[in-house]
Length: 476
Image (cartoon, rainbow, N blue to C red; front, side):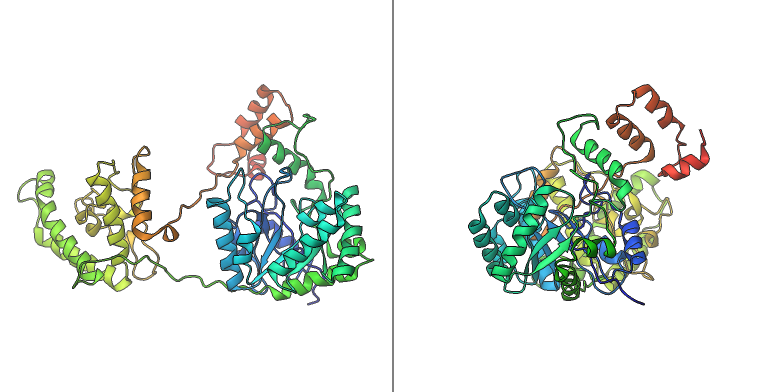
């Protein structure tokens, strides 16, 4: 199969929240149709989509990257970073984390000092007009731009910094391109052509504009609002890109060269559980088993109170407990249970309200004996196998509900016990569902609420229904 000889290296997905409009599935489909050998994902200051992208993109060359910042903040610049390998990916993760934990001001930010510490395995590109080098050039500060470019090359290493050219119909961009080409001849810093893609096809620019309005709380008619100055920020074909940069063909061939240098293999499917400290002379398995056995005996009073005296057989309970303990040991999850047991115990001792447990963990007698859950699974015939299936090793998932007013105390306890670098908070995405999106878009288009409401109410109440489906089901 003949591959196209251009790769997009500057591209935003739906994980550039409310700014990127490329869904990964559609994006990958288009890249395949255009026969692109690879594609990069460069979301604003985050790697939220990295794993999703890694799993969906065809095996072969894969990269991830992070940009930083927004179009409008003059106090800091954009820079594109691509990870070449495992070391580069780890450094990206460190940079992004520091960007949120240490450098956050409206948006995650990093500085050159941090980049110098974590530059290995990364390729940098000078980015859009919000990049440092292009911005200095536009201010007529050619010498400063040159210094800045050499500094980036110095930080990232000789072959790892590129000047980024774009063709987007913006007059300042044409000026920046001319100067960047001149600077490239002088410094030997190579050129690369990109398109800062925010949506898939040219005709999507209107929907992208509406998305920006939703993000900024404005309507399309507002004159003073964030908007993209042209309709060219789509995933252009290799032919379109080559035509734009016919005068600097190396800017096109360099996209392939960079793509070939980025080969990241992530090791998936391995568990990295924290180390739970147990008293001397114990293994984690033995400690968990002892706590569970003791806990079960203490629970018998409660079981009797609920079920009535003589209405249950303690031996049935003990046998079930032993089989669960065996299974947990075999699957290597004793440490995980101890971690959860420990922070729930901490919460209860400090009067932080904890829920009784929900989800499949309620099927575990070990969890009940350790007071991780407060529901006896036996009278309800709840199965341990629903929670942990020895046939298909997957992580046990114990949902824990803490009182929202005091959950911070528990987080603090866990962070202090295992170290800041071993504790993370995870994100949940709310996607715009059919009814809500009609209301949002109606608002930014200034359509009267009563009309929008009528249309939104026509959407059938099926869970997660798409607009396409809704139109099929309700032609009105």
